[in-house]
Length: 335
Image 1 (cartoon, rainbow, N blue to C red):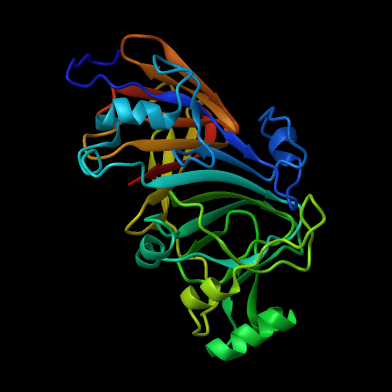
Image 2: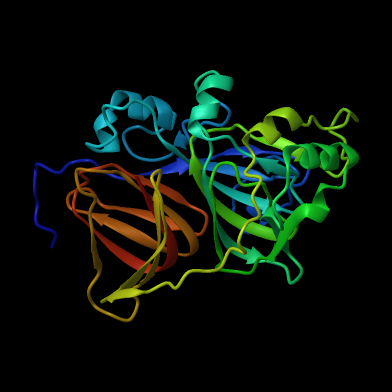
């Protein structure tokens, strides 16, 4: 039995994503993750988003049918004490299926975006690689220091790739991409992305691809060069990760920065009698993104919330006490 505490009342709810049919996308988000979004290709699903370019919907519980943005506007306490008075939801969580290479791109930081993009946030992000083909490579920064003039010349000539650092990506890798880092996700990658709540991307090079109307895709060379880190980047190395075990689960820290914290939870209560205690505190919400398997959240008074591979659950701050049961791999995101 879970001990009842009437001071803790917020309950988790499932989210339904918005889809994006960018031309480089594939079909795995529908085929493997049951998204049932009528797009082909389905390049991205914005699983947890209050951004106007792709709003997530609440799919269960008392707020079902509303957007997440509407729900948090009505219940700002769901964000937690650190965020409730700041206004706005600070992050955006996506699945990305790259059938083809994404463009070479860069994102501004908060200060640049505030001045040049109508007060938008910048975009620092993190990729967790759920799957990758044997030859999948990502572009990550420059392989040497480069001047602004040399970068502009290489972009206009279409030769920028010779200056980029190429890194092999494999399943379970983590890549932290601060604002200003030139990057590009490679073909064959399936990733979960956690980022600031922003949709500002400066496209630098796009392999001369055409859009749906047969026109060259827009580039943003001047702004991209303004914000790009021109120093040569170190090869991103996978950090040592330590699993912290308790009965029925294990937890490891993947990334912590000023914008978000991401952990990976391995849940396995199938072979033990006890379920895993779970509850958010008053300081922050959490988002559970199920990458593999399935399970249930049992609440103290009103049943359970079942989740499956591909599901995204918003858990408000100061939640009811719960028990986790199942066999699943999840990302646990908080701010």
